[in-house]
Image 1: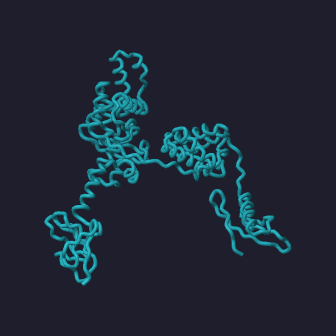
Image 2: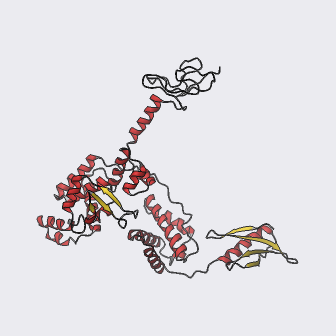
Length: 444
């Protein structure tokens, strides 16, 4: 008797078969239950098709886990405890908490994770977009909720039966072009900061970031003890990729950082120097409001200073994170491979290629088309022509001297020295111009 398959909500596949008993008109579903024992249950259906549907319902009910309801606050408290036990970064945990908080705002009547259904998850996406959120923001929301529900609520805590966000498709959006910071743009930002604050430290910070393409959070928390041998070392516990790395610095920049560095952090003098600047300007209230150094305070101040620059000058906007992408693009343009650059910058090679490498696409396109139009044919030339018009190598239709081969076929000659011939030679040795490239060889 052929067996059937019932797929459970969690993806498990349970085999069963239908049979009839003597003297009983309805089909019976036979399967192994959660206890691994053989079960037989009547489908109460005489029709085979309806019996299949009934059997699936019986099996799913038999395997259904009776999960006790858990409220939002209790569920998140448990989830965060497990996240910390798995050594997730504090910023990652905050992202997950923010995503759940946003979900609860959209559905204030929900009392716990199990109240969210697949239709509600789809409606969440629509609502966020209607609220004016950018598609990329909504994509991140859905991704974070997918992890919270799929991994933490369902797989780890087992407080829900299924992940309602599993089949929610993120919104599509046009990928923005990577922002390459030109030298003049960088100089204009540094000049504005210097004129407004008369302060070297923030410029030194940004010069370091531009030189090694590090993340702003990593640089803000850089330790003085990791400034060694002409390099700034980032330990695994401070990097996003959880791997330590060393960044070679320009000699002058390294020496200035050594002179600037505080007892613990490289930029530890930030708070003291900012207080002194406010006092020199007679602003005692602002000076007294400056708190002791913390990496997050330096990071926030640098970001606020950049925002003030763009708001004031109306200069073309870029993010401070674009210094990282610009450094990566410079490495690539210098001939460094994606794999090597990815090691230096602590990122995946595919991520670097997709998001950071801001090449001059116009010049690349010009070079490609110039090669097509002046030196090769699209039809697949085996032998082209050198700068003086001499054929190079042999093709299937013409030999290295341009003489037709007796075997016939297609001549794979390229352009001549002047770039005028698009094809190779035909069977008579005459230039054949066909379309935008390629040549024919006469059958002999």
